[in-house]
Length: 253
Image (tube, rainbow, N blue to C red; front, side, top):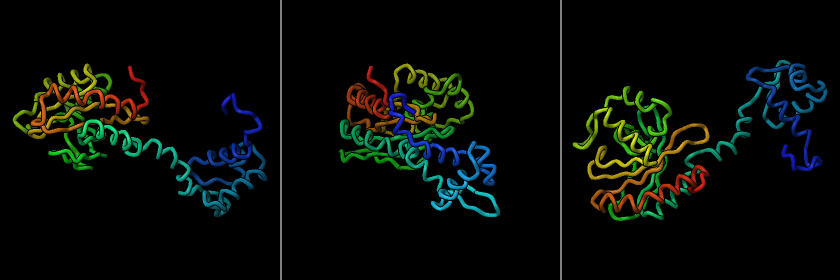
């Protein structure tokens, strides 16, 4: 309880009801077992269990109480608050508005990255992203950005387990050269890849860690013909940093 909260706002009955729920570890329990685990009388435990059973959170059979799937609904607020696609959508919408480019959210999945969300723009020649598509980490900006956040020799080990193959004539396939690009991304705070996965496409990507430790990245792919590298970086870098700050709650330097 917050030390600044008045004691008369504290509902002990609610606390004890949560304790009854927490007493279950996956196995059905008798009334006596629940009462013993929570440290309350059997009569009190019965009232809580009867209420929770009536509400559908538990079922009672053969003298034992069992947790029901309805209990999962209690985690919905947390899951919604920590669902990266829900949290990222307004951030990506703002990013797309600022740079007038398609923006994406990807997650690291082993040696690949998964596109989970994209906000399209109606800009001429805008990049179309296929949601749910897996792409190799070694030759994409998203992949290299996320590899740059792996601790220790995590990026080295992942690249050693990968069999890079050329996707275009510009694709780096030597693990040492790829690792140098990963290290450059770590220094810069972003990865920049030009035509290594798809001819004619330039992408800047910045990675961050989600609350549960999952690595993710925001990206802004664009046709290379639209502008020079310098113009693209100058236009996209700061809005992309702002998007990552908004997603992670980090303060601007």
